[in-house]
Image (cartoon, rainbow, N blue to C red; front, side, top):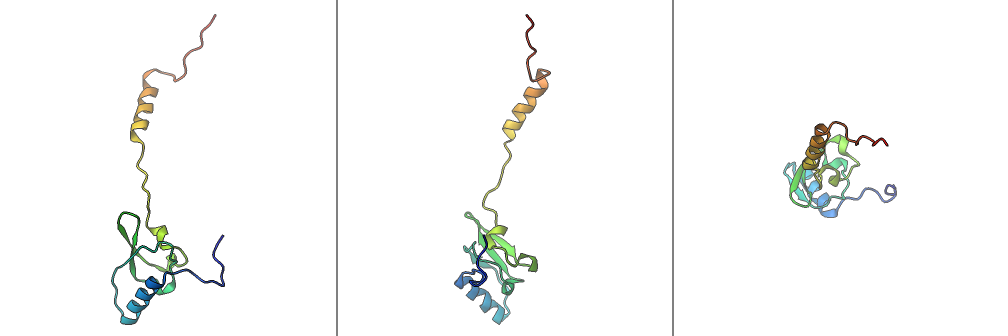
Length: 107
């Protein structure tokens, strides 16, 4: 379920303050942020926000298509590394013995 419209989007106050200060001064610099739950608003367009993924900061350049999404959506926290050892074992077992199922014994 989404957030109520009467409440408005959640943006952490310190992040909003930093973005508004940069908009007033015209500066463009990377802002480090641990606020993954903050929603992307139109004032952030054109800025780069380094979002923490639990290990490092991932730079995210904000575009118009990102409005309404959360910062954490663009900074992956988990990476899948294939189970290559398991795949090799099953592949080798399938090619050696012909068919995988043993032949039924006749009486």
